[in-house]
Image (tube, rainbow, N blue to C red; front, top):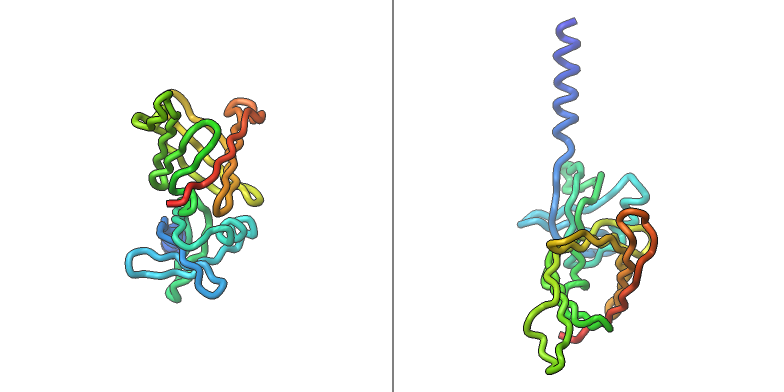
Length: 183
């Protein structure tokens, strides 16, 4: 009986260590999504069709972080995606509201032109986080010192739309359309 307990605990211990956190940049190679971290490269797979769809939406130089199981053949089976950094979202975006400077995968500033058309001081410094969304959208959380904003991000190479929803009811609130500026 004590051997059964020992082997059961050993199996649980091995199983518990199979899941690992991962993060790195995406490369597209011949239809495969490769996760590059330091000098290692992992081919990404997923048993869940939903997670596979999210992985397929990623492009070269996008960033991904989550939980997965890596095997000895450098294949990472993705179990969950916690954070995504979209390379094409980084940069300057012009909207009717003002200029959005998406500085990196977590920070953005919103500049509203003044009478003299200067863009010296941002109207808002915000943190943001992108997670998987349904269809061709991404879930975008924006936060400032006052509150958290929930939205969906739809984008292509040159245009983006952010649709804001109430964090309490889920009701649609507003939409911002943006055009990417050449850099």
